[in-house]
Image (cartoon, rainbow, N blue to C red; front, side, top):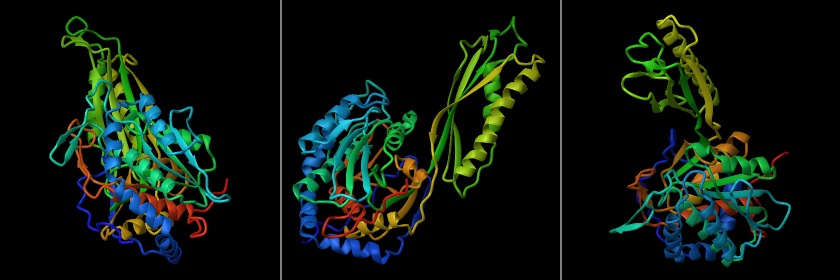
Length: 439
C-alpha cells in the first residue's frame, strides 16, 4: 500500500510546559526495526492506516463536537459521559468511568502480554462560562480547547475505529483512556489515580499537542505553592507601625526574583499570582502569592523549593522585625501542585518507537523533548511512556484565540497506531516491545 503524503508542514505548536529539547533521532536497534518491518508488512495494519486517512473528516468532526462540550477544571463529567458514549458505540463493551472520572475502555489482547495505556485528557484550562463554540475562518477552526486536548481525544477515537475495523488483534491489552485533571491545578489527578488503582500497567502513550516530529520522553516536574501572609491589619494612619501582610509578601517576591537557577538542567520559577489587602488606606491583614517552580531534574527542583520556601518564611520575620512586633504577621504555606520529574534515555526503546513510527510517515528531523504532561506520572514510576502529537497544526494554546488547521492531520492517529502496535505487539505478526513490569 502506498502511504499518503510524506510531507508534514512545520508545526506551530509547542508544549506549553516544555522545557527541554534535543534535536536528532536515536539509532534504531535491530529489535525495534524488525518489529516495525513486520507490522508494516501486515495487511491488516495497512488497512488500518488507510482507514485512518479515509476517516480524517470524521475525526475532525469528533474534534469539533467534543470541543463544544465545556470541560473546565474539575468539571469534566459531561464530556466524560459523551466520550464514553462514543467509545461504546465503537464496540468497546468493557468501558466505564472510574472513581476519579477517567473514561477507561479496555481492548483485550491475545493474553499473557503487557498492558499499554493510550490516553488523552478531557479537561481544558478555561473556566466555566467560556464560549467554546467553534468558528471557522478560512482553513482555521477557532475555539478555546480546539486542540488542547480535543484533538488528542479525536485522534484516540480514530485509532480505536481503525483497530476495530481492521480487526487487529494485539498480544497485550490496550486501554484507551480519557483522563481528567491534566491541566493546571488538576495536578494530573486523573493519571495519578489511574496508576494508583491499576498496578498492571506496563507502558503509556499520551496524546497531547500536535506535531509528530516532537517526541516527549522526559518529564518536566513542577511544585506549586499557595503562600499566604496573615496579620492583624489596621487603619493606614491610626494603626501605622503594625506589620503588613502585603509588605511581607513584597519582601518575599523581591528576594525570590533574585534567585539564580541552572540552565542545565533547566530550572525555572515564577510568582504567577498575587492578591491581598482590602483597601488603599488599610494595612493589609492578608496577602497571597502563587509560586510555580519547574525543573527536568528532581534534585534541582527540591533544592529550589527549599530556597524559595526559606525566603517565604524569612519575609514574615523581616516584616515583623521592621516594626519590632514579633509574630504579628504569620506565613502559611500549602502545596497545591506536584508533578514529578523524570527522564528516559534518548536511545531507550520507548524513544526509538516514537521516532520510528514517525519516520515511516515521512518525518526526518526530530525533537526529543521534556514537558509536563500526563506522561510525568509513569516516567517518574519507571514505566516506559511517550507523549505524541495528535496531528495537524495550531496555535494559541491556553488562550481564547486557540486555533487548529487539519493539515495532514491523519498522520497523528497513524503515528499513534503504529507506536501502539509496536509496543503491545500484533498477534501472529510481531511480539510486544513492551515487557511486563516487575510488581
